[in-house]
Amino acid sequence: MEDKNPEALGQKLYDFAAELYPICRSITGNGVRETLARIAERIPLQISEVPTGATVFDWTIPKEWNIRDAYIKDAEGRRVVDFQRSNLHVMNYSVPIRRKMPLAELRPHLFTVPEHPNWIPYRTSYYKENWGFCLSHNELARLQDGEYEVCIDSTLEDGQLTYGECYLRGQSEEEVLISCHICHPSLANDNLSGIAVATALAAQLSGQSRFYSYRFLFIPGTIGAITWLARNSSAVMRVRHGLVLTGLGDRGEFHYKKSRRGDTEIDRVMAHVLRHSSETYGMLDFSPYGYDERQYCSPGLNLPVGCLMRSVWGTFPEYHTSADNLDFIYPIQLAKSLRLCAEAVEVLEGNLRYRNLYPFCEPQLGKRDLYRSMGGENPSYEINARLWVLNLSDGSYSLLDIAERSGILFSEIQSAAELLASSGLLQPLPRDASLSEENRSDEVTLPKLAVNQ
Ligand SMILES: [Zn+2]
Image 1 (cartoon, rainbow, N blue to C red):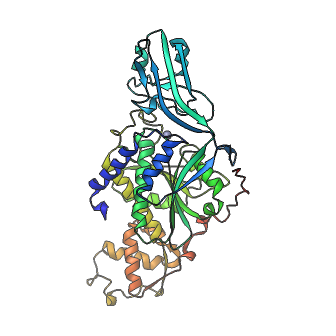
Image 2 (image 1 turned 120 degrees about the vertical axis):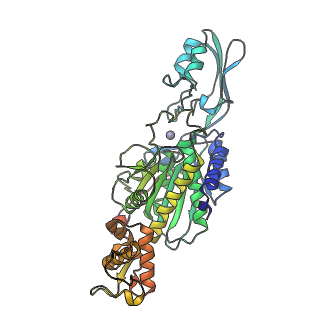
Image 3 (image 1 turned 60 degrees about the vertical axis):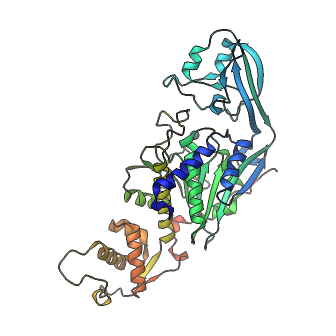
């Protein structure tokens, strides 16, 4: 496994983020297409396009935005703000403009972060036609009164909203949904770290046998998730567990935001892998703001989808500024994030239930060579795991239940169960019967969806 060398793996993840970093992405347009094309070089990806004007639940697919160039030139013809130096310089979704104007007229269209005078903010105006430039506060302070030539060479026209899906079929049609947004331009942690980790996780899983089917969504934030949910009601009903991945490359500690239900299997799995990791972490209750878990956990869907991140969006000064750049993310942090996701998948995949075939008193482990030979000492960790598995395997407890109740790492509990099963003491129960009721999404009935194509 590559993760035996986390530095090398982390560097691969980082290199992919660096490759995607210069692309000017938005919620639609060629930046999204190019990003998806780079992902498709690494994993099988199905690309979908939905036309402008299509209805997706309460929303309408917006016009497609593309941009070639943008600048503000001073009276001497020097580019004092230049899109070619940073795509953050243009407010994302700015309508085209080419005009001369005095600074006083330009000023309401200029955005800065005064508290961090060297940073460029990231601004968008997707659903209200507007134009603007983002620049450092220091750059703004240097602008003299006078005439400026303002150019935004963009197009905002009928087109498509584009998203990508990587579907990995498992033994079961029940799905694990992994979702990340692909709509931010040159921002490293918020956007690219999630894409890099999700792509690598899909690549790893594609080479493994799987119980669950896995669906990785690479979608524009909000409108992309709404679009996918509106157009895929049968897949939505097969989602048993899900994770939104974002902000996974910075130096901050892990945070897991629970699903709306708060006690689903994925919530418990993430709590378990975080508790047993060597990392510090925080658990957050669901709130109806944040990333696309907002859509997956809307009341009509209420899917078991949580969100894994490191520093929480909006709580660190670099968030949505030019300081969320390639210096803000670290290969080893990306590798550890991927490792945590892979561990969560291992728990989901292995969370079986067993039945103890010798439930009347303890079976004699010693005669099967499964117990210490000398009495009197504390049972070792391994034997402890066997005793817990034997005791709780009455068909109602899953291995995760046993891991939680015993405080023992899931993989130790799983190894104990496999050993006891191979010794004839336990019998695995059929997988379907092992799915707990609360994780079934059968109650989801989507309204008949109007997608005007
Ligand atoms: Zn963001």
